[in-house]
Length: 309
Image (tube, rainbow, N blue to C red; front, side, top):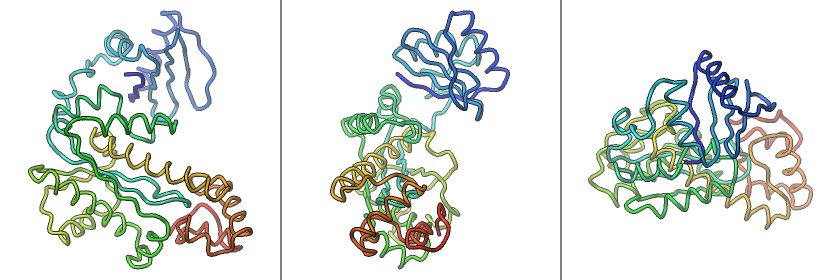
């Protein structure tokens, strides 16, 4: 384990600072952090939002076992996840998506099957929610681990921009399109793992939208949807696979277009889109971008940026 994130109370954050001072850590400024400290190759940062602690470095596991848990949180969790959170270790599918909020690129929905042995292996390998991984190289490394894990059945559904725009026009609603993608991933996994009793996904809409999509495919699997679903190992693994496929598409298409396609729906995205339109015409947007974003109107000369339908 080389990285770990955990929420803290304000009192625990203060206590952790005192512990680090006592242990001779060197403190440094970091934006949005209450404090950040380093000792050797271990970095410990407590961010204002939460607050939460991010621990990074090859001594992460030892720090959790011998400092964070006994001296700060007072709860031994590492290595006891199967006792504290048994549902993570029961056979189930985890589903997550990537690209939903990005103007450029596909919508990717991925799923993984995990059981006790698979979940333990993925946890020990450092699998986490893709939003906590800032390096594309690290995303690809973790995705390779997931695919190489014995028994870890996976499914990746990638809806490229041209097909996405057609489907969005048909569905008339992003949540229904998402539900279709989630149901398609579950259908693929269920074909390979028909005995799996349960599926879990991050809640992106009213539960009945995905339930209806599953019913249309004749799937009767137990469905659970919850916010922060990526805290589940199977969902986190799915988020890694989805993000890998998304960034692979962005890199490949950026090279083909000879313009770097930025992520999100920022001013940099608008500028890149305008350069593409100026060079290749308005029709190029339908090949690389999600046209229902209000970013499209801004690029073509009307509307306000950073919004979606």
